[in-house]
Length: 124
View 1 (cartoon, rainbow, N blue to C red):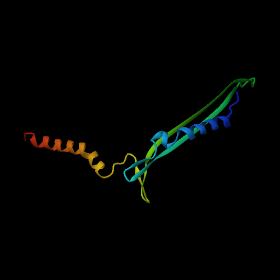
View 2: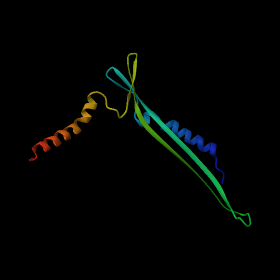
View 3: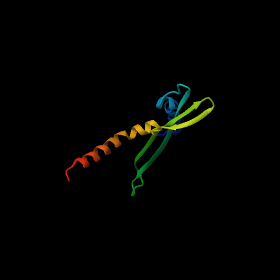
């Protein structure tokens, strides 16, 4: 069995070119008021292959042949390039900023207040 490595790599490269794009992962650039937002992603890939054959020690006859290949790919949204007029900034995905960061802490704050009130109401 012959492994056509060049042909396989062409197919993988074509798949990555057409599918592993920002538009297919997180969407197209969009306008929000005066701001233009462009999604940014990170792509990581790994490839591996191997082959081997078994040989009988006494007779030196071939007893088997095997091969395999594998690939993995990870895609992660990083954030957005945001432009307004001639200013450009980057906003990280998953990182809360400003008022959004404060709202993320509200459940934790409510829980602490509840715990403190419960302790105060316990009989001494």
